[in-house]
Amino acid sequence: MQADPHIVVLGAGPAGGAVALGLRRLGYRVTVAGQARPFAAVEGVSERVLAGLRQAGFEQALAQVPEPSPREVTWSGQTSGANTERLLRRVELDRAIGIELQAQGVTLLDGRVRSSRTCGNGYRVEVQGEQGGDVQVLQADFLVEARGRAAPGAGLERLRGPETVSLLQAWQGPERAPMSAVQSFGDGWAWMAATEGGLRYLQLTLDVASANLPPKEQLTEYCVTRLSSLARAAPFMAGASPVGTPHARTSTPILCREPVGDNWIRVGDAAMAVDPLSGNGIFQSLSSALQAPAVINTLLRHPQRRAQARAFHQARVEHLFYRFARIGRDFYAMEQHSAGNSFWQARRAWPDSVEVHQSVTPGQVSIERRAVLNGDLIDEAEVVVTPDQPLGIWHLNGVALAPLLRAWREAPDASAGQAALARALGERGAQAPQLLQWMRQSGWV
Ligand code: FAD
Image (tube, rainbow, N blue to C red; front, side, top):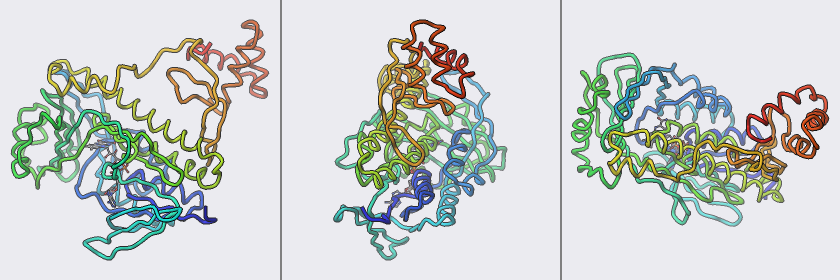
């Protein structure tokens, strides 16, 4: 590997942007090649997306995030209005990410990635400038695939959930306070959002096979008819009209079984894309992106630890995917009115029947060596593995847990165990009772 490797990131969404900023902070030469999304969308995000944007260093993007607005949910005939979410205009978020990248020394190429091929030990990437502009050729030592759901997947082993499509239509109406709503119905669910300037986004999510969608020119009428039957859609449609034609987005959950190699990595939706029901897509894409700089740094600088770096990324991508797929499954299972419809039947049984949170008994808790994130690198360390934490826990508030569990287990009785814990904690020995209580509550001892 070169002394000053060139890393090329394909795609300038939240995931590509977060990786690029992280790599810049580690001193790498980074070029991002991306074109703007071809459609406008609003997406609802929770507070943890804000935390992720902050962690990634997206100061400009954070300034685009509006205050939380009320969110009403009507699911299985029951309405609750206790929630809020922040309604993020994606065009503005993505633009702010681009500005941030350039401000922090990342080279940003505005254009469509036409191809990326292996070339020698690296890659040759062709980027077509906007509106059929010149083609630029980039040589990359390391490639980050962050083109979201548009990332090519040919030849990759991928797990796909029930095939799902979302129809997104913009509407314009009189100014009203920002708000959003979700409603389930016979063969799908709808998400509706009203933002400043009287703009609204109404989205229907349906099963690809059973939706029987009409030709494109009749899609607006189709959406209007379906939305008109939903009580929660009425306040969004009142006095408003559709703008342009609906945009059909694939929203099938997809997991890439092998998201990393020795000189490439997939992050964000390109690694795993979740059902939009979770409302966690941006959070998940940032999660896989925030860990990627350390993985890449290890692959480039410590090739002897390649296996651990790859195992780390793969395990975390897969874990996150299944966790949110199971949370989604349980939410789908809560719909009782239309439970017999194939839309709900397929989704409440996928991906499996494993519970989201598993109870833990001491006999199921083990100490194992696993790949861990240690500063800017992936390392290997002893961690505590449980059915609920299959990736293992290394530290709690800076305290390594495996030595504590071992000390407790090797002690002949409880009082010797407490003393052993205090000894193992050294200067923080006074925390032994609290840690013991925490281990008991977690089912470890
Ligand atoms: P993206 O944001 O998709 O970024 C990829 C970038 O690569 C884009 O800018 C794209 O234009 C660019 N690109 C693609 N191909 C090329 C190419 N050939 N050349 C150059 N550039 C290219 N998440 C939420 O948190 N809340 C929601 O409410 C929500 N609603 C959703 C509704 C639907 C219907 C869907 C499908 C998803 C939703 N999501 C939501 C998920 C969210 O959009 C994604 O998880 C998130 O944007 C992924 O970020 P990313 O950076 O991985 O990919």
